[in-house]
Image 1 (cartoon, protein in one colour):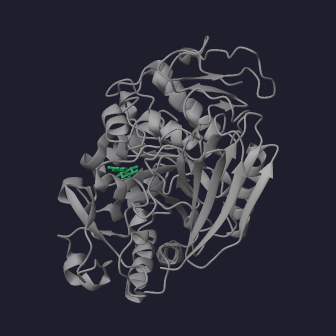
Image 2 (cartoon, rainbow, N blue to C red; image 1 turned 180 degrees about the vertical axis):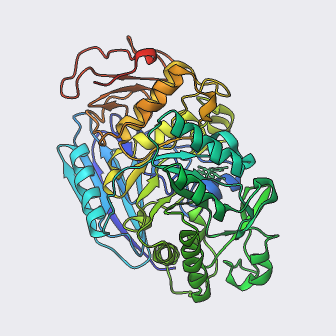
Amino acid sequence: MQTHTHHWTITADLSPLLVLTNGYQSWSESELRPLTDTPQRATLQWMVDQGQDPLFPPSGEAGVWRSHGLIAVIRPDGGGWVGCALDLSRAFAHWEARADGDHVQVTCTVEGPDVELAWEETADVRETVEDLAGRLGAAMGALNPAPLRVWCSWYSYYLDVTFDVMVENARLARERGLPFDVFQLDDGFQADLGDWTEPNPRFGRHARELPAELQALGFRAGLWIAPFLVGPRSKLFAAHPEWMLQGDDGTPLLFGSNWGGAYATLDTTHPEVLTWLRDLAATIRSWGYDYLKIDFLYGAAFPGHRHDPHASRAEAYRRGLQAIRDGFGDGFILGCGAPLTPSIGLVDAMRTGPDVAPFWDDEARRVFIGDGAAPSARSAIHTVLARWYQHLWYQNDPDVMIARRERSLLSDQERGALLGLLDVAGGLRASSDPIQMLDEQALTLLRRSLEITTPDRPVSLTTSHGPTVTHFTRGTFNLQNTPVGTLASHSFSAYPSESTLPSQPVEVDLRHVSHD
Ligand code: 9PG
């Protein structure tokens, strides 16, 4: 594997410095932390496989911070240092900041062909992060489509989704006048991973029959696939074991854990695989879908043996993504579980955090197993906020609002924090709430969450209520378990005006939600 290492030294009093990190893929933890703290490292291998880069996971070592694409070290005055790669279409940029006495040793290891790196000392880290991220986005042709409002089946129905559930929710949404653009069918319609065009009897009908029903109700049709993954019992796996990424023993590599076990992934440097991917995306388009959520994309960049041994992981990944884009044409593509930087310019939108869940925190998995990608409202807010600038790479998808009160453990304050997240992230809007479950209060909250806003900017990187960026021009988040002044725990408080910062945040009363 080709690598190139670059090195810088910062001389400073380390104790007040903060570091801003960017995790590898959609679900990987991203944060704003004291440099001398200790990053979490997941202790179970499948969590590393599925939530981090197995070749560059968090260090687990005090004062050693790893970050993908860019990194920032921040002084108490808001100035500091920012490093960012300026083209990541063929390589990964692995940044590491290491506390070392009264120095910080910064390295960037480029995995793949060497790339131009920016390393800047600045009086305003926030501005320099945005400036350099913007240059990276522009160099890679970042797409910037209009945000969409999406109903997605996953976060209520999970694998139990049926054809009738989709149509019934679309019908009720139309009846209630809810302003969704797209109804998106998630995981559960397919026979197996890889056998996407074969129906799962549990779903009731074939997914190709759904677009006509949704369009008749005035919605666009969206579909989820995990295009690179292949189930070990699927027809695709049996037919083409040579299309799979191979392990050292020359057999298909099985990794991760979901759907009851490990899975294989396609080798996207194999020409026949690229043709198959292009055809798959074109087939789904021909069924009438013009919105595609492509998930578990990190598979194509997983370490292993490939048909083209000269392709870097980033190149292999991008060839696979390009094939899907070629097949899906000008349809809208949302990336998920995706290595972030090599996706720029090929996806319209990107999930920039782990899954939201109808509860605040999963302490067992997050704290005791050290997995920052564990689904929860808190994890999603934490990571998405630390990536506020990524709207310069694609449209941010902070994941769904959960407005319902049934089948949810979220408090009013916590639902308000999710609403604040969608407002501040300013990208895609989504909900999975069963429409018939929503009372007047929940409907009001859902409608608020579907109002398109522009991405917000932090007002400060040096004060925060939680280990991420929490202070924005439109309001403040408190992710901590204790109140701060009048700001409740697990909450977001909007300021009354976008341009003025009052000395005390104003509480949002969810029963009368309004940002006007
Ligand atoms: C469908 C889902 C939804 C969801 C995606 C993704 O780490 N994990 O165990 C883990 C499992 C599933 C997952 C994310 C992480 O969810 O983000 O929106 O599409 O797949 O299976």
